[in-house]
Image (cartoon, rainbow, N blue to C red; front, side, top):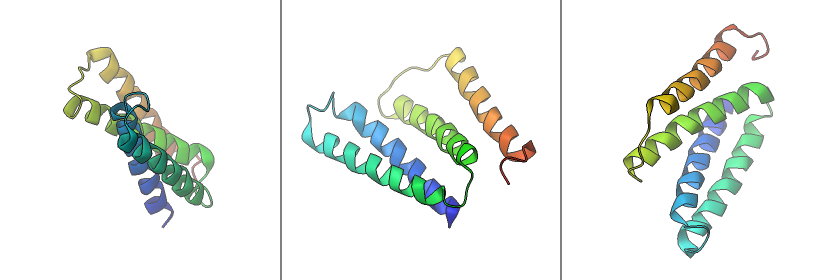
Length: 108
């Protein structure tokens, strides 16, 4: 259940970030409302996940997957370009999350 809560937190964070872009600095009411609701839900489910997942582990997974998914949405939906340094940076973040979860004793 703890990873389901974390997955919901990630999905809502990505949704909130995407609609934040669509809200055009909170000038459009529907995307703005979705942004606020998504972030409230995100932090609620993240708090539930933190009951049984260490903070560092949960945050690393949340942030790592969040940046990958948000970048994909920015490229596919908003037609933004991504360059090699951005891809390299994201790859390093994901590698860090993997290293932390596979090799660190902090995650258990």
